Length: 315
Image 1 (cartoon, one colour):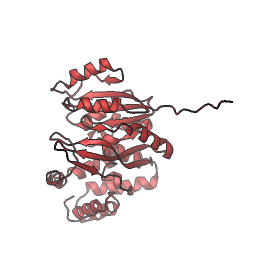
Image 2: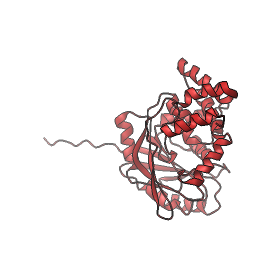
Image 3: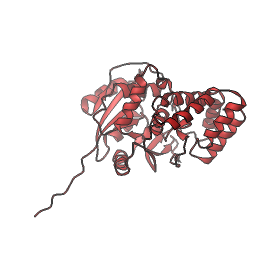
């Protein structure tokens, strides 16, 4: 008797693409998304009041390919994070098997989504991210490694890899959407959407994995909202933001947001201590923060830097 071969059902993936004046890069990125192998994709696009012809170009593409769904005009949002929050709240991703974030200027490797969806299935994960390969107009390339092992509190101090690589279960997206729509939550004020997503996943005991294999070509140019942080200028820009208190303010928003979701009493008590320390001042608050910071970044050098900045009162 002839044996029937079992075929794997192709996963349905909703890709949330945020755009703003990206016409010079969008054709390559959209082609790389629509050309993903061994998956079914629907691309949901939210445009943040582009003035370079992006909106008209997207309209034409949606007529040529029914997989491209464009949300009605809205905005201005003013940041990529707010644009992604609009996509999370307004796009129809609920029936998808997985949800992905996409920036307008990257290039996805052809098997990105199939490999990441397989990882989620095989390892029973909630979400996957990955390393990326940064590239510059002059031909330079650099591997951006974010796949160090997780620490106990890293989700309170950094994101879970580059947001442009995220592939997530709809259940995680539902938690994020509920937070964004909750009038008592400060989640919508968070300026780093991928950090918020990672924190919610980890704080609610979701399983997160950062794949060491780079799945995205991460374009670097003068208009990057968040770049690869490679070189002197990006390092100085990042230092200035930390010195000005931006990073700590964002950590406060993250702590306040996830505290609404934690059910475990021990975790709630620990988060209460962390929130108090983040909002406090003086030597006592720094000491309490140091207890979290020693397990607050995945890279050793980053942990040491964070602890040092807290100890001297800069962070």
